[in-house]
Image 1 (cartoon, one colour):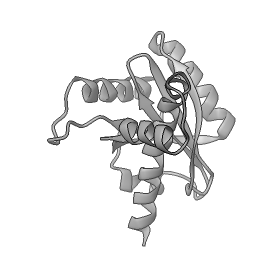
Image 2 (cartoon, helix red, strand yellow; image 1 turned 45 degrees about the vertical axis):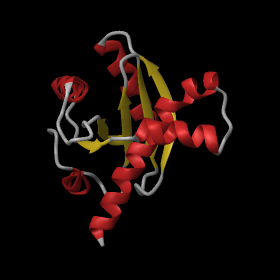
Image 3 (cartoon, rainbow, N blue to C red; image 1 turned 90 degrees about the vertical axis):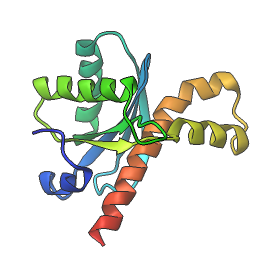
Length: 157
């Protein structure tokens, strides 16, 4: 497979197959998963980054446990629409995944996802700073994945 446009993703998957969403940070990878019908995204796990082979092994175990067959990666686009070093790092991660596993990968613009999650955790859940640090990346992954799932649902009509 390859990196594909998000709207091409459903045609590459069985009718019922989960998808994982990733929020790639500098130190962690937030992981979320959809249900098999690809309607709802849920935070799943946090992978502490070490080296790619270990990170990918942990991701593979999570994907297999949920029978996920595709990945949506949050792409940190700058507010003006350009891509910086973090976006290029996400694209490099996708290329590395494709070197070892044949599966579809799509990107989703993640602008403001972490900010939105932090605001929600502060305002609505009254979460402490320490607790927010534990959950923000996987919650951001769910936010990213839910945005992509909503886009797919809206495109399907």
